[in-house]
Length: 368
Ligand code: FAD
Image (cartoon, rainbow, N blue to C red; front, top):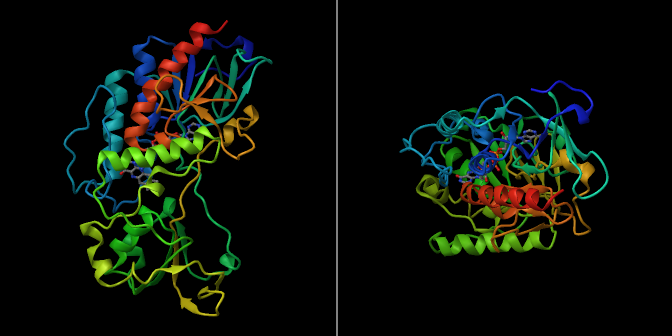
């Protein structure tokens, strides 16, 4: 690792990849094949990206599928195995087998141009010194930026409250009256596994959930991705791909469905009280615990000095080579995003890694 010093003393890399999840590893594979000079900086202590932090009860049977990393297909996962062990083991083997230059734990705190002008080197400041590069592949995912909406009274609630990122597993909730907040796949899964364990479950969502009735085939997947593509093309904040696919009930959730928990879903309450939640009409649901399955936002705070956000509130991206893979920041073509917006799924991240690496090579070949 480089010692902190003045940036001009540092070697100039072709690229710094930030993050070593599915997105960063895919980009790294292709940068390596293109013989570019790069490093991957990852804030975690160990391989596995966000997968290493998923809750213990999430098995390979529960996940929606993990796409192959380029050049090394996923092994035959045991459906009963814990996702937070199995996927990190695959990533770890991948890094080792390919000899990828991953440095960890290294958290990037800021990225800034060394000088004015669109081709100036970028200085990457981290918790372990500085790096200098001609381009950035940002692959930081969302897990580090949980979204917790504000509701009056939440701090005065007497029981425990968890966001998805800190969900302790079903046993914690045995016999408790639980309010699950959020209209995404995580909320549906939590309710499924709490159905026979919790004392009672109340489900609240901001919008009426949209249930998917047909199969989730490749065409449905493409349609969902196209919706998010359109948002980043217009510079809007991206939605998660999962949020536009519609919700599905799987066999694991059958019991909760039979108990009518999903059907009894209510709109958001207006305030949290010490012992429960209250709606505007005065109705009250007693609760011992609240689970906020309210999603995540892209982890991009370290890029703020680059001023990539436009008036529409998001980071506008363009598709450098393939009309359906948006990776390059319109406001600064040195910055490439993988696993962001339409590529925020394991399959999308794998594909976008290739496009971003090729875009880096193109950028360097037309640069100074
Ligand atoms: P991550 O895996 O989050 O990796 C990002 C890495 O960047 C991390 O190692 C992190 O430490 C690092 N990092 C972050 N900030 C910094 C920084 N400032 N400096 C240095 N490093 C940094 N998708 C599927 O296809 N199938 C599924 O079954 C599925 N299940 C999901 C379940 C949940 C609960 C969630 C939240 C998402 C799920 N997704 C699933 C989406 C999927 O996880 C992601 O799209 C994909 O795995 C993310 O990969 P990534 O590389 O973009 O991010």
